[in-house]
View (cartoon, helix red, strand yellow):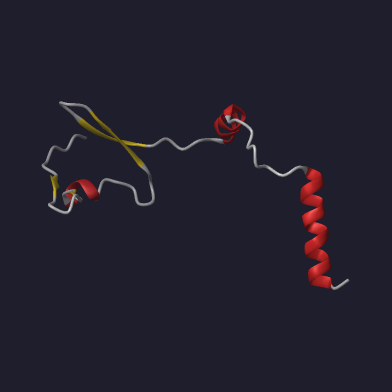
Length: 86
């Protein structure tokens, strides 16, 4: 099914999408917008499955501020001592 209609950008910079289009969009779904000089495209952003998520996670650089296991253990000990008394 193809629906063609007109959307408008308001003076406040908001995109007014006609109701017949909004009714076709799924709530709580993210949409990706691509713009070129001649075309604007709205596409549903694909959801990642677990394998895709883990592959993307593996591609990330390590966090230089990530505490070591020893540092985490020390923080846990300190918090336990504060909560449970010395």
